Image (cartoon, rainbow, N blue to C red):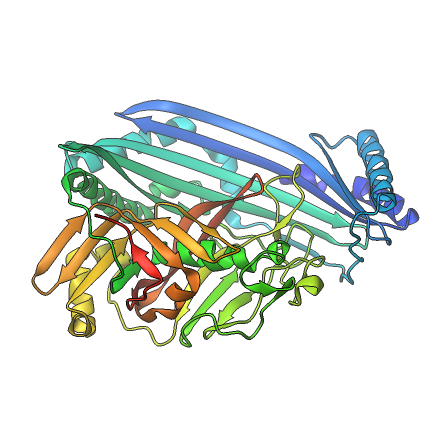
Amino acid sequence: MIEHLDALSSLADLLGARARSAGTLLIWRTQIRSVHRVLVQAGKTEESSTATSLGHGIQVFTPEGGTAFASRDDFREDEAAVLLDRALEIAASGTRLGLHASPLPDLVPERGREVPPAAAAFERIDLHGVALRLAELEAEIAAQVPGVTLKLSYTADRDAWRIFRSDGTDVLYVMPRCVLRVQATARGREGPHSVGCSLGGPDPGLPWDEISVRRLLQRAESAARLAQKLPDAPPHRAGSFPMVIDYALAKGLAHEAFGHASEADGYRSSILARDGKLRIGEEVGARHVSIVDEPVPGDHAWQPWSANGIRRGRAVIVDHGRLAAGLADPWSAAQGGVAITDAARAESFRNPPLPRMSNIRIEVGEPAAAPGTFESYGPEEVRDLLAAGGVLRRHRRLTFLSGYAGGQVNPATGDFVFQCKAVYELSQDGIVLHRPAIFAGSMFGALRSVREAFGPLRLDALGTCGKWGQNVPSSGGSHYFVVLDPDPTVRLGGA
């Protein structure tokens, strides 16, 4: 795979010289991606597939501010030259049409190469062996929690890019990703209910990694037991309550509510901006709360360079309660009044890049300790942890929202709607399980109500971020648990 990208140097020189002679900036994005999938249910292989895609995208920028994008599903030299010429024509015609011009930014040429060791292991993936291993894990989970229907899936994704610019930039990176997912379904008097869990890592040998498998089995057994209990659980009453959210739901809050609102291509309508510029310095949350986005090595959403060939930076979006940065590319940063982080990502060579998050998290100052692993905390352990930390002395009852099951936000208003996997009412008198409920409200109210956190940062909450028809891996998290004081703008739906 990588050798095919290595062989593109001479073609890159040809296209770069052609673009320079036309007085334009060229960004040439080349990609080869292979995805392996296996799905097992009831001990049988329901799917086993491998798909590979390759090609290149040409984007040109004229000194007058015109731009054009074109792509092809091959690396043929003659066709690439024709494609570049056509893109140059379109960029020039865009200027004549009177479209909004974006001046060329001052870019510094970069050269680099990052290929994690796990990338080589993709050449040795044995899908039949993976299916047998998933069947073994399925049987082990079923033995611990009989009576549930299980689905186990494996996805190994090796995404390799080489990005050239006509200013001499040449960066190559490979993003290896492997994800194991378990879905458990059980039926009660009120019908069936499903609960899922996942685990990720860069190595396609994940199903045989002892530590990872132990963690997955813990998560899967908890999900299966929860699936058995939820169909007959009562609904929670609606209202504003003191709440505890886990790191997965905190990641959803950071990603959906603040992350998207801080992306520079939306500043004309974002609640975080005024007159098209980010409201840098304004207070948006509690003083001990920060939101950080940055690529984390080995992470599901790791990407060392942007789709523009610029080293991806760390963005402290909220710094101790104040808005401090946005997610911007070189063309949107100046307009938005923020620094270049370069947050540009693209799903494939067929897509122009968009400002996007990578690994985003909520950090709370001076978190309290939470011994052990996150998986060792069921609702009883969470209650005991909060009782020892004094939270149950401050609030007689706490509503614990466990897990993240999707959601959305309106960046123009800052209103969010999330779904959790389960709701528990915690008190000194006991623990009551409730059905999942809608967690909704104002992102400012939610960040303002954060009181404290327990445990170290946990950043492996996996997801897929959709925007303008492009889907890219996302991840992030927070401390194990985050406590929110009651706020009238933050509510839990229910009976």
